[in-house]
Amino acid sequence: MSILGVKKKKHIDNKQLNEIEKEILKMKSELLTMGTKDKYLYNSANTLNLRILDIENIVNNIKDKKIMTIFAGIDGGIYRYQDFNFGEGGPYYAMNFPGNIISISLISIRNKNIDVSINIAINTTQQQGYGIELQNETHGYYSFNTPLKVKAGDVISVNSLSENLTCISTLVSLIIEIDI
Image (cartoon, rainbow, N blue to C red; front, side):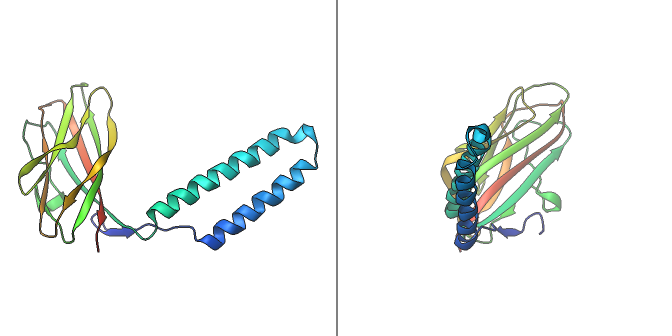
């Protein structure tokens, strides 16, 4: 997969989930006959069952969705209002399909923990509430409560809202759910 390629999430189908569930039920019934000395094992099986149910819920929420990630970065110090570069393509990324920007992550290696704050712009218009800030941490992510809609042909850019000349390398990634 290329860095900017579309990736379809793989998922566990219902048949596989049913097999896993049957195996857990079988383990539970065997553990019940073992007596109290194996309660730890029984509790572990219950915990595993809950995790399987969590996975099933996650899979049902993401199956058949097309997700892509785009990356932009800056090597060296960051100036206020500086654009991040999308690889060799410069500071802009043109959307091929309509979609929703659902989350953002940022990593910044720097000599001092001076804040790094960035924001997303669509067609050179800053999108209020669609950014991320690092304070004392080197990395972070944020899932937007309301996804940022983009149309085919929209131009995405990422801009710094703060200056930090102590940065060595800073990389932002955007997770986009494609509507096709």
